[in-house]
Image 1 (cartoon, rainbow, N blue to C red):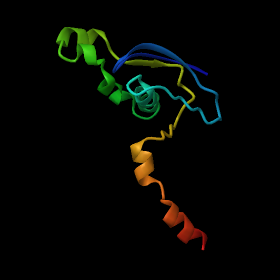
Image 2: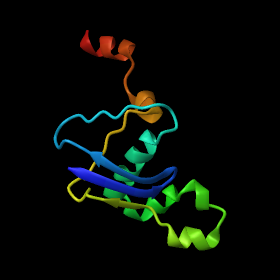
Image 3: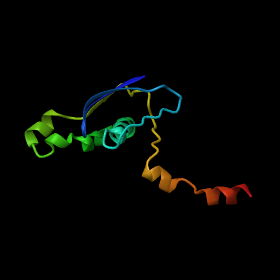
Image 4: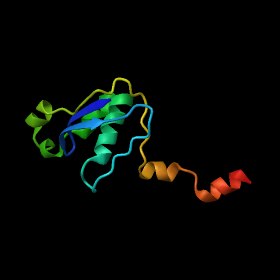
Length: 104
C-alpha cells in the first residue's frame, strides 16, 4: 500500500510504502517526520476531522496560507487502526516486573 502525505507539519510531500498485515518500522534521525507520518495516518484513519492539527509549521502565522495549504493523506482507506511505538505506548505498556508477576 502506498500512502501519500502532503502538508503535514514539516513534511511538504512524502510517499510511504506500507506492507499490509505486517509490522512496519520506519526509522530515521530525529526531526525528520516519523511521528508526523504516524500521526497523519492515524488521524486520517480514526479522526479525519483533526487532520488540521498537522497544519505545516511554515504557514501557522499566515492566515491566508493556512486556508490554502491543508494537510492531506491519501491511500489509507483500508486502515482503521494504527499502533505507534512512542512515549505514550511505553507509558501504558506493562513493565517487566508486572509481566513477571503475571507469569507466576
